[in-house]
Image 1 (cartoon, one colour):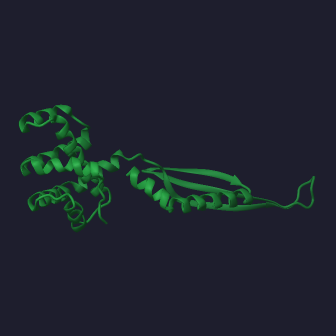
Image 2 (cartoon, rainbow, N blue to C red; image 1 turned 180 degrees about the horizontal axis):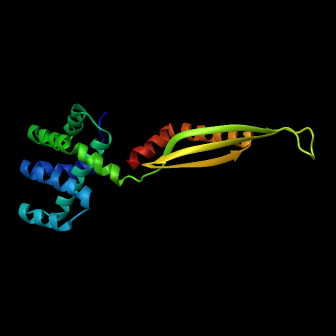
Image 3 (spheres, rainbow, N blue to C red; image 1 turned 90 degrees about the vertical axis):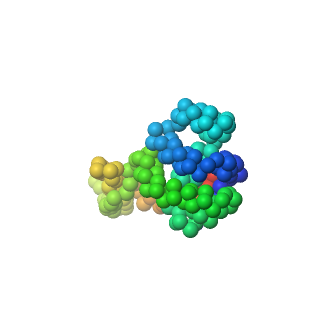
Length: 199
């Protein structure tokens, strides 16, 4: 799977071809630090003075490199796909190898950092259900009143919780229909385009 970069990201990464490979390695370290601790304008200003460029250029270069590394790590791109993704940037062979090495050295750490940054949401563990039907009561001798009871077990890390839901079959059918419609909508071209831009 190839990583698709926008023109803006290509422009930001283009700055890397103008500096020494050792500086690109330092930018990689700064990009990982950026993920851990956030942005530090003083680092950009210091690097800008040493390289005689604007601090904005340094910031764009680091952020472009950070985006390249985080997206590649998130998608767990293979070495070959990473090289093919970087090839379109028109960098030298040496710079391409350096970027690949940065990705291989920091990919696992970046994935760990991103997993800590992601919100922790409970996820499905188990579902128990029961169908109850009331056939008669004192007031009505012949009635059929079905009820579906669901017990949803969720897990959030080490914490487990259970939620009991009760509904009638018609409402349950409607809920199933709406969820299936939402899943189908997620597979539409329009939704895929939106999701691609969100990433």
